[in-house]
Image (cartoon, rainbow, N blue to C red; front, side, top):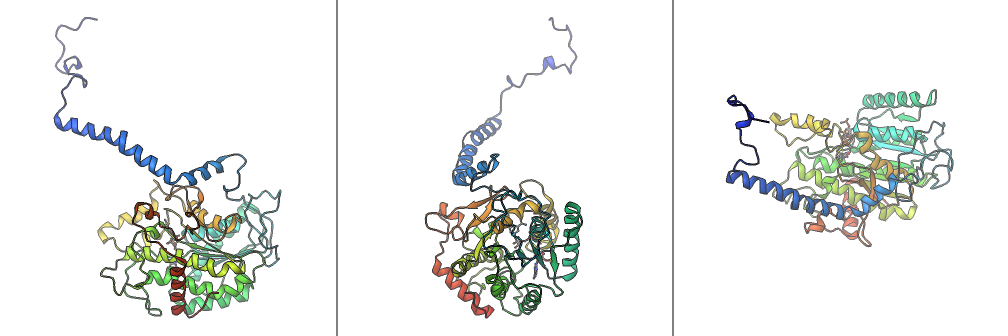
Length: 431
Ligand SMILES: NC(=O)c1ccc[n+]([C@@H]2O[C@H](COP(=O)([O-])OP(=O)(O)OC[C@H]3O[C@@H](n4cnc5c(N)ncnc54)[C@H](OP(=O)(O)O)[C@@H]3O)[C@@H](O)[C@H]2O)c1
């Protein structure tokens, strides 16, 4: 086709095509960098990540198969069968064959589950999963009785929607479970003992994140995060020990930790209350309290395994809960919108129902043995997979950073020392 004799000034005919225009030196460098990123850096990182997570990846792929082999797990479907707490199923009994429940659901009729921090986020979602799976009784522990009652009303309505006119399997006690106050914890466990003689599933879930290390808790003198996230849960577990031992099904204690537990050098066994260390910030204190959760979970397994009680740990990756908006005190006021964003950001995060699956699997999948650590497949998000420790090592004591050399190694002796330290403050022994 012949070109027009006088093409208009704006005509594309006169514009040099992209291919023929000479690139400036800066543009050439930019392009080279982008190429380098996609051709070299990205594949190396992806391969490294896949290599580190190979075992977990294969478990996940297995879980997608129509007939899941041992090792994979799916959340059991709702079970509307009325079940009375204390009816006493055989120890370790899982779902009955042909009941429709997923293998290893552990929804035994005699089960009594206790959840701390049950009124919101992962605690509420965990209570929902346990209630819908048909566990005998789910006892909500909250620091506000009113918030607890509101949570119960929500859970009852959801179960009634699915199951019709069934008796509620969710209970709220008449006293608050405020972990800041060890006497309130004692009053709550006394109230629980009037309601049930045994506990089969204990979820140590409640937590605060990145609040200032001072003022210290007036009762224990500890930084608030170590007090609430660890010490008060130690105290509660010690108080509920007789009820755990009486459980007709093998009792399981699940401690909620965090990816933050893996931050290197946050936990100092010789200076747990930040008196000798030059810096004590709220983030470091959160990491320390979440590492304390792991050491405690391992210590519990060492001490209670012989009684047939299994202790497991779970971390929920990044779940969209009020943990961020209610806490994260290190952010200045001007950046408080980041907290709201973190609570709602849909990218690379999970809903609280998805995040709670880690601790739910740890509690009900009877093939996951005591001492295991359940985490999301891709660390922040993903299906619940069982983290594997190195040869002869507990996954709870392993530090992810150890493979790049920044790790702190923990031994059983360290864990025993930590348990003794906790006992010294709580005044109660776990054995
Ligand atoms: N969300 C995540 O991405 C994430 C990641 C890693 C680990 N975690 C862990 O998951 C657990 C649950 O957090 P979440 O994300 O579900 O946050 P959340 O929605 O803020 O829930 C925290 C729960 O703990 C309760 N709580 C706080 N202080 C308490 C106290 N002194 N006594 C009794 N209960 C207390 C809260 O009660 P109120 O409602 O009364 O404040 C609330 O019910 C925490 O241990 C947290 O460290 C969460």
